[in-house]
Image (cartoon, rainbow, N blue to C red; front, side, top):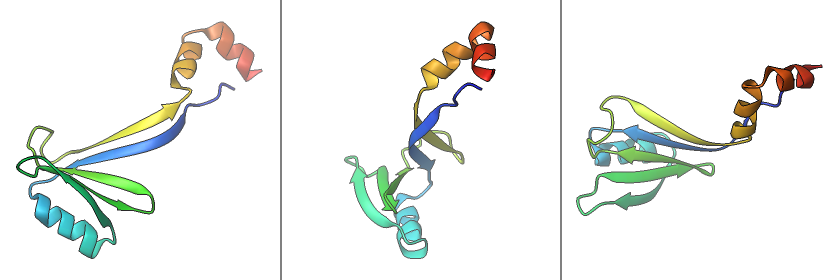
Length: 94
């Protein structure tokens, strides 16, 4: 069986309507710690917990009402190249 790609990092970015309220919610109600703010007019910030960072984006440039999660993977290009080669895939399965 071919080896699946390994996720090595997640980088979630949540679109929010109000950055201050969102920071307060995650820090006061959910146990996150404030990490940083960005922008002349503050439109992006991050909170963290247990070594993971959650980015909050109130810029309006992203999708409204939806959140996006970016993640880093190891072995994806190798995995995808094998999927395009049935001869290699069948050899790995045996």
